[in-house]
Length: 170
Image (cartoon, rainbow, N blue to C red; front, top):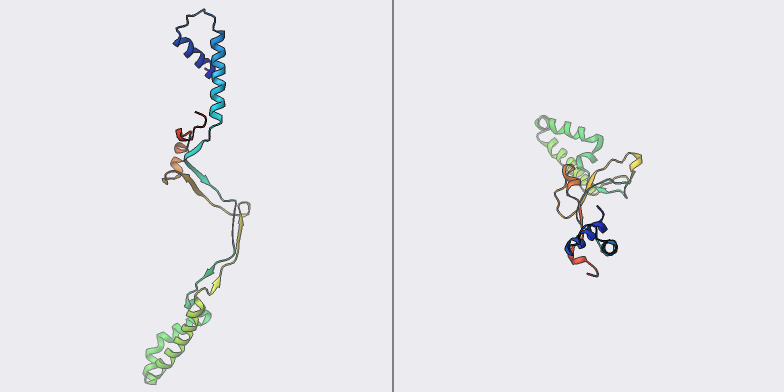
């Protein structure tokens, strides 16, 4: 049933209009009230009070990120050599009266100190410039209101309400 018919019937009922009586003016009144209500409601600012939705990124881009590098990584191909001599240090110390351990410790300490200095922001990632149609796969959530968002309850919670505080020309 249309709004104008429901309004006309409500007016007819409140004035106790009997069946068979000419309702032309009442029906006109119902139609005009319906148009006035529609005009009024469509002028109102609506606010999303609660929304839960899936968001998909179209594009992701950055200018590279400074990255810390472990000193052992900066030793590169020499890291296994240092590890090898570290394991043999007790035997070499026996043969050299501890001289090997002292010398090796100084060299290792100096190399690790140099590597540690360059390990902080020692590398920069490549720029990221990805697009959805070029392999970027993302999924996230956007919400207004509460923060309890998951795939299970996305559509059932989203609402748009006309707040009484936002009614214009009441």
